[in-house]
Length: 187
Image (cartoon, rainbow, N blue to C red; front, side):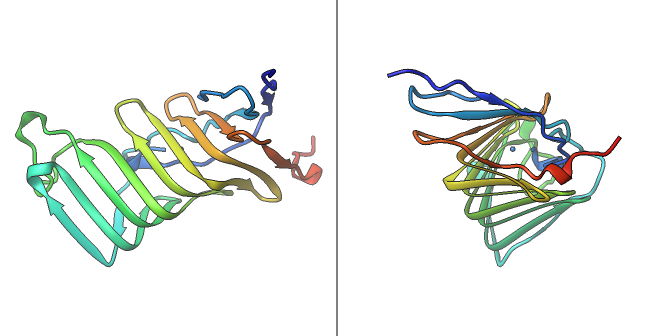
């Protein structure tokens, strides 16, 4: 069995996950991947974050906050929506979830994840934002990354937030790409 080569593309990107974080590949023998540099996928802590949900459960002893039901997070031009979101906090220095001064370790989202920033959108079934490793992983039976009429489909999107490096895995099949020639900038 041979390894399919990765297809490298340039995607002009402006997707930012902001204060929550943003979205490299461990390729299996039959997986195909698309790699790109997504410069907008970097942290931005300079704007306020608004979170809405049907329910919030704070578990200070476990250092986590659980948002359920129509979760919507907005920071600047970035929006994250999911059925549920669990925020895990670092417990160093005696900070607590309710004090508002705890640092975020990771964020888990599930139940139809939608991420939008500027002209880009990404969807999947679940996701993990790891603030320590500065990574985002969006997974699902069908993970879709789109910008205008350009559409990329796989089953796992991996983003390194500090560099903007992103890869889309096919997970045993093939990555599907639809590029609109009209989306290229005219010089």
